[in-house]
Amino acid sequence: VSQTGWSEGECNGKAGWFPSGYVEKRQRIPSSNLAGEVY
Image (cartoon, rainbow, N blue to C red; front, side, top):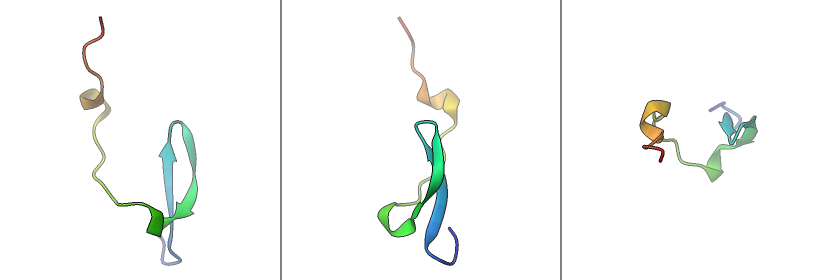
């Protein structure tokens, strides 16, 4: 988060800057925990 109220992030493969007031900061989840078993 910058002092100007903007944050940099990535979502669904797209990266960019966005207003910090529209999001809540959360811990990053390791990608190994995101994938379940595939059948």
